[in-house]
Image 1 (spheres, rainbow, N blue to C red):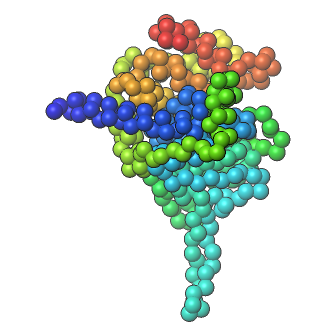
Image 2 (cartoon, rainbow, N blue to C red):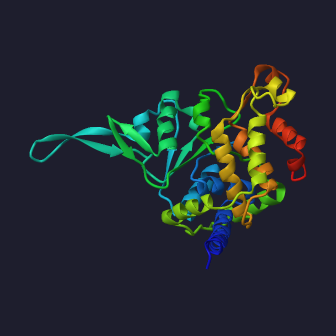
Image 3 (cartoon, rainbow, N blue to C red):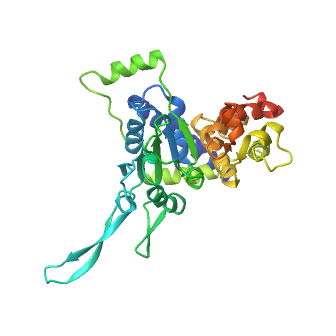
Length: 335
């Protein structure tokens, strides 16, 4: 068996397991297939996700179900204005032994897990939010002058309420850039909401079962990086990312007039990984232009910002992204 045949066989086997995982997740998180795909994409890419949605749409339920199905040690932190960095990272306490001796002992915080749910992350102060930056990027934390590695794999799935802004602190650009994708969780349609009522208000609810283990997920992340990406897909990723940089002389007039700052190279990296993940979840062996179109808003939407004039005109980033896609001959057909 050649190396290429072996790779194809592994990808096909992984696709079957991912289909089973999706089936388990949708037993408890009903009808939101796009949200599930984006959350699974973040885990397959080894990244973090920011879930934006109103209360009561199932964001917490999704993260808990993902933890079970993917076989990860999950913990949840409710972010509040008085939450301190030590409440997340942990701290050293002075412990007295039976012989009267004293020594400092480190008590691990909830960040020492494999899947951390940061609920309403924008309610914490900037100081506490910054405690996550090193963990999200480097998979380690520095406490009391000592660097402590986190578990592998390590993922943060954070939630944020898009409406209520009183008593909140906007996430800084540096932290937003650490999130691989932004996932908008909207209201379900009528049939989906009817199905939710039938499934969750009876005598019992469906329970999810484990499909992956932490080791399986790490192996899947390694396999994803070996997945081939065509030259055309790569060129369109680069062109689209660079098109939203107002400093770029090749950018359109709309971008230069409306965008305050554009996506950096980390956006290109995230784009490259997520199109692979989407192809895998769709049961294909390589990404195509449709994957580039589908992942543009989740990858780019939180990595750039409109200027004041554009906001005053009522413009939206999603509309600008869609407009730039339609200007590309190779992407407009897949839109």
